[in-house]
Image (cartoon, rainbow, N blue to C red):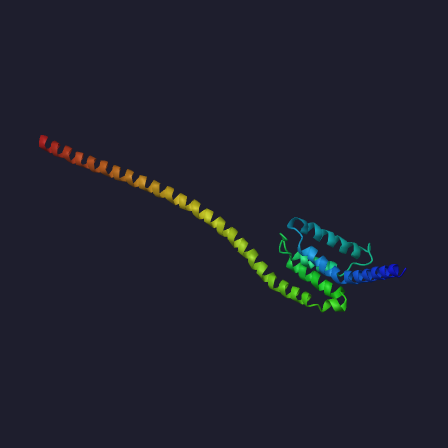
Length: 190
């Protein structure tokens, strides 16, 4: 009997430790889950979390955990997200800080995340401008190549016209010479 009491006590301790640790590690594990999502599932996950929030706002659910806003922050600003939205990420982070318990608000990670988002936002805008300028550059290079080709064509046509003009000029000179000779023969005949 004492052996079974020890076994029950050990199981009870393990269960208490496991449930106590689960609360502590749940946040961290969920964060890791959202940070390791593949690119093709990010949009679906964002839609899923936004749907949960809309249901709360519509009154369909009583409570939405504040962590959902943190997860949205992570997904909006995810490095694999094909269309990151840093404004929405900052808004979701603000909402998380308003709803989170006091001990979560003071977390260094949240301040660090906010600073990163504030730094990334202007860089992302510069990146978009860079992409736009690269597109314009490509378009201008194509136009430049087309204009170069047209210039070459016009240059070839110009050379051909110059040759034709030279040939016509030579014929005119020959005709003038012929006219002069004919005039001379006419004078000699008279």
